[in-house]
Length: 127
View 1 (cartoon, rainbow, N blue to C red):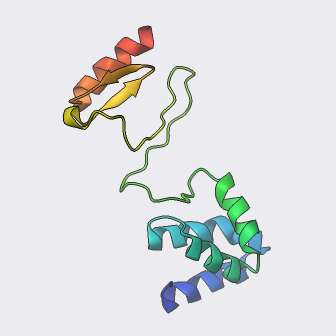
View 2: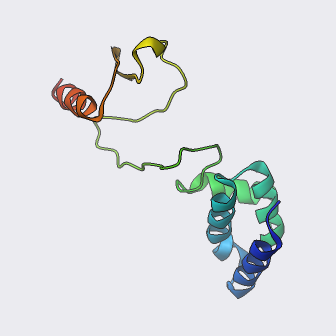
């Protein structure tokens, strides 16, 4: 549940917008900042504030890359596609004893450091 003060502030922002949809991203980002990500509860709260259905808010939330519909880390990294690498988070690579670990193609790399990751990516970029 969002604090009353935040709810009041968001209502003011929505009322100042030309249309509720215009304020949707702003509302979603504020709720995301409050919860850490846009929870199902936050989708319902945003829908109520905006006068939209939860489905309409969900559609908007999944369109924008900066709205997270699942828990995310403290720092989120957005990257532009370079046609060489695609970053896909995963829960398990079956290599915990060598963690932290990453896989590039079928190659498994463990005991990673920032320097080692840079070396691996440089090598894989040339492959």
